[in-house]
Length: 356
Ligand SMILES: Nc1ncnc2c1ncn2[C@@H]1O[C@H](COP(=O)(O)OP(=O)(O)OP(=O)(O)O)[C@@H](O)[C@H]1O
Ligand code: SF4
Ligand SMILES: [Mg+2]
Image 1 (cartoon, helix red, strand yellow):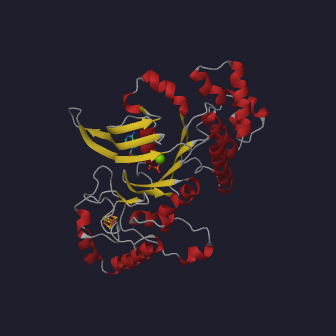
Image 2: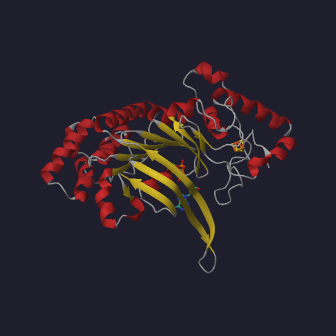
Image 3: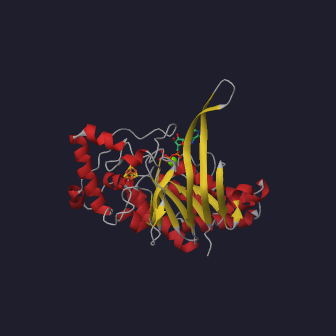
């Protein structure tokens, strides 16, 4: 069975400065040669620190912005070569839920009009059909039907995100790009909205491309997880393999930074403190872009970019050091890294010498 969404070797640079003749001078390498699949009814979670390229990757995959290179196929159609008219026809099948439910909803419009808008734009339903669809969708997201005549200001943050979800699903899409959909909500509301998204996925057969900087949230939502660092996927595979048996030092640093649900485990966990600032996407380090901060870096890491290599379980990692070592996974990797990080602090000159 072919994937619903297939992304192959996709890259995107942004020009942030031009010279006097208007030629590109400084480029941000936002997404660099990325490939992944999303199957029907499944969730691919994308996790990584701020600026790693998660939102840009999602926007490229939905063709909200244009890629410089690569191939993107959705439901068997080559998105990059589709005419504007065919792309418009396909839009209702690919929709989005963004982070901020306050800016996403025009405060002057009623909920009924807001939720019906994508159907009106698609133009294939009557006003009566649109009203019936809105009433059904409000029920599915857990809002009373009398919400239709009220405006967004009458609702809490969590309820507004339910309105945003209703609007994203009113056209009955097959794929939804969820970009940090709960990070603007308070903790108790987050769990409810995540539960709603999971229920809707099951009931409506949705596929999600689910972006978050929080590995715990991504693990709870995803079938597969991709970890992004400075525009590249450095680890990808089944959710449990990536979140529990992670094999990339960058993933290990994300795990060590995210709070453990169990306070005893939290106390026992040692935190990897990365040396230095995140590298600049304008001038990325050579070789493995994580090498200036990686406690396990070898001399080769600063010279050659490690390929993303998959094992038989579909768990792929881009690392010169951990890839050939079956024992360097999960807690063992974390423990090796915290030991190496201590060594970095004690003998900074030696460590710096090996990492460059
Ligand atoms: N339109 C743009 N013009 C110039 N640079 C951009 C543009 N959009 C994104 N970038 C840059 O591309 C890189 C990736 O940005 P992106 O928003 O995709 O990251 P992100 O992982 O979603 O971050 P966050 O977690 O903060 O949302 C960043 O360095 C960002 O500054
Ligand atoms: S390739 Fe080297 S620098 Fe990069 S993550 Fe692996 S050990 Fe660290
Ligand atoms: Mg983002």
